[in-house]
Image (cartoon, rainbow, N blue to C red; front, top):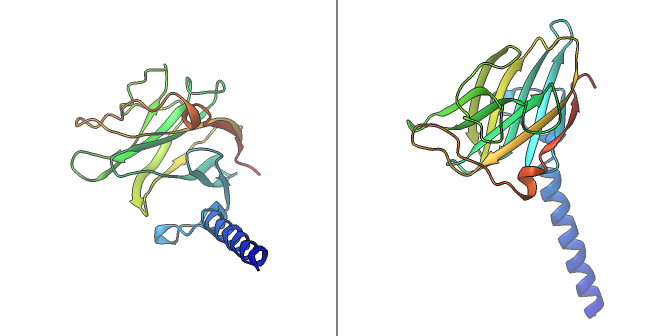
Length: 188
């Protein structure tokens, strides 16, 4: 009888774990406003997900990057056209500004102590916006054209605070925050 009870508990825990993890899968996520993205990946750290539509005619990419975050924190995602890692990343950043609205802007990461202020990137970005829903921040944007490339190194990040003058503050420099790098091919 004790073995049967333990087996039932183990099966219940595995089923619950599967349901929770499958609910967070990028392919089942429903965006506010019924936006649809044809491709997505669940990123391995920072509870983050990248969704996109590749537009071959214009060599552009419509993206939605979303990550778990408190309303007082910030998120960022970007591609690094010149290397692997943080420095060189052309980033999109989102946070709640001091006036209470969600803000999204672009910023190139040129050092390990970036300013995180709005600056132009090395490629065009349009329609950038951010939302906060269900304990997640989401950045939407159109990138490109991206010069005959579809595969890039990319980085993503999260921090816990934003200053009163709307500057994201330094993120952790250990654990998942230094593991948040990878490659993505938008044409797949």
